[in-house]
Length: 233
Ligand SMILES: C[S@@+](CC[C@H](N)C(=O)[O-])C[C@H]1O[C@@H](n2cnc3c(N)ncnc32)[C@H](O)[C@@H]1O
Image (cartoon, rainbow, N blue to C red; front, side, top):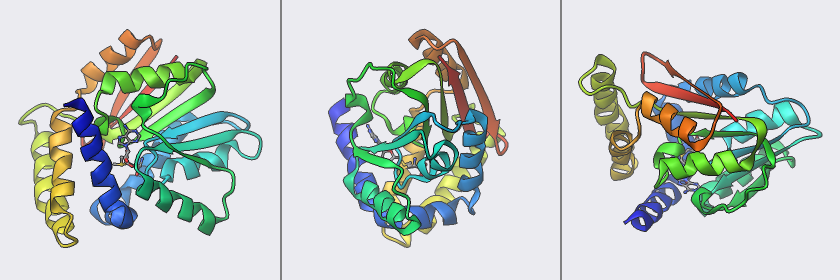
């Protein structure tokens, strides 16, 4: 069952890879860039630090972090979908950025407890993982002591709250309708289902604390549409 979802998610992102950046810009009215920048600002990557962007997709966070940690540090973008990672690599070439390392890998299959990263970030990735707790555990083991991690994603708000109703309307009327024009309706309809299965703010904080993080903070943006989880080891 779990295996099935992983394959399904990989297929979705391979299929939408060629339109991913275009639709992200269109469907968020360009706002996803501001939220990603906000996440990176909150995490404050420093020159010389080693970072990873997990579920990096086309690498937006990796590019932002590369500006902060280069030339001495490192940033590795990791994703399980080869096609979307190829888009990231192409963007690297266009930007003449040879600094970022790209790795194809399933985050849940990383078995590295070497505590090698000062920081880890993930945008719109955690919700897609087969097992959110396992994903947070992987991040914990990959981080150095006192390392920090940040996750940006849709906020799973209270059922029937204003923000929940607005989110459903936005996803059904705008996201699915527009993506249908590109024959990607079912792939984008998946977002609403994935939010329903995603832990809410308090649950995310509890999971992180149980995993062993010393500090977990969660803030919502855009009236509760998105959420940012910041963890300190
Ligand atoms: C919604 S996209 C987000 C991409 C990028 N981080 C962004 O914010 O634009 C989710 C990404 O997570 C990747 N992903 C999903 N499950 C994964 C897993 N188990 N391991 C690695 N990557 C995964 C997908 O391939 C996809 O590129």
